[in-house]
Length: 495
Image 1 (cartoon, one colour):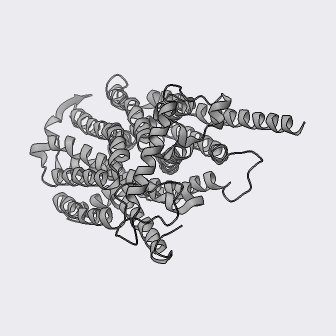
Image 2: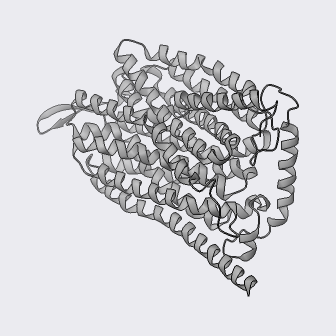
C-alpha cells in the first residue's frame, strides 16, 4: 500500500493526517467563530457611527440596529463566498491539483488576516473583503486535506469526517482572540500572528501533500510529497485523465438510478453531467441547503439573539458567547462518530452480488437520517426563547454541524467518482450558498417587522428543515430497489 518499503511512507501518511487535522483545527473554519469576533469588533467601535439615539417610552437609548445589520451582512457575504467559490475552486483542484489550489488558498487566507490586522473603526469597510478572503482560503485548506482519507482505505469516511470536525472546531480561534483581547492583546497583534502562520501551510503543501491528488483506490507503491522512490503524480494524473475521457460517452445520457444500466455502471464510468443531473445529487443538495441555512442564520444572528434574551446585559452576552465558542471545540470529537457510522460495514462480508458502492450507500442512510433529526431538534431548541436552554442548543448545534459537513463530503465521495469529487463538492456547496443568502432577509425581517423577536422565523425554519428527510428516504428506497433486483436476478439464475 505504501512506497519506500512501506516504513517511511506509512509514518509520513500518519504525520500528514495529524498535521492536516491541526491545520484544519487551527485555521480553516475560523470564520464560523464570527459571534466571538463580533463581540470584540463592537467593543472596538467598528461601524459605531451607525448607532443613533432613540427614544423609547420617554427614555433615550442607543439604537445600534444599523451596526448589527452591517455585521450580519459581512457574515452573510462571507458564508456565501465560502460555499459559492467552491465551484470554480473545485474545478481548479480537479484540473491543476493540490499544490495550485493550496497556494491560492494560502494567498487569499493570509490577505484576509492582514486586512483585519490593519483595519480600524475608521475603515470598518475592510471587514467585508477580509472575512470573505478568510472563508474562501479556509475552505480550500479543508478540500485539499479531505483527500488524505484515501490513504487509509477502510477508515476513509472516518478520516473525512474527522477533518470536517476539525474544520468546525476551528471556529474557536476567534474565541481565543476574544479572550486574549480581554487580557490586553490587541486585535492587530493576534491577526498578524495568524498571518505569519502561513509559513506552516506552505511547508505542508510542498513536503506533506502531492502536487496532483491522492487517488482512490490507492495504487500499489503510491508515493507523494518529498521524493521517496519514484513519485507517481504524473502517472496518477494520466490515469484520471483517461478515466474522464472514457466517461465522455456517458455524458449524453444522464445517470438514472432506476435503470439496470445505471445500477450496473461502475461509478468511475459516470460522466460529470450524469452525476450532476442524478436525483442523488438533487436531493443531497436540498438536504445540505436547508440545514446549512438554519446554521448560518443561527451563527449570524447569535449576538443579536443573546442580547434579546439577556435584556442587553453585556456580561450575560459575553458568558453565553464564550459558552457557544467552547462547544465548537467539540466538533472534532463529534464528527468521527458519523464516519464510524458510514464505515461500519467495512471489513464485513457483503451480500451476494452487492457492489461496494451499494454497501456504502446503504450505510449512509443512517448517517443522513440522524443528521436531519439532529437539525430538527436543534432548530426546535433554538426557537424556544429561554436563555438557559441555549446551552442545550449550542450542544445540538455543534453535533449537527459536525455531522452535516462531514456527512456531506463523505456521501459525495462514496456516491460519485473520485475524479469528479472537487467539481461535485464545489457544485453542491455553491448551489447551497444561493439558498444561504436568505439569512440576510430573514435577519432584516427579525430586526424590522418582527421587532427583534426571531420566534416566527425560527418556527418557519424548523418546518423547512423537515425537507432534509427526503434525501435519506430516497437513498433507502434506491438501495431497496437494487436489493430487489439483485434477488430477482439471483432467483432467475438459480432456476
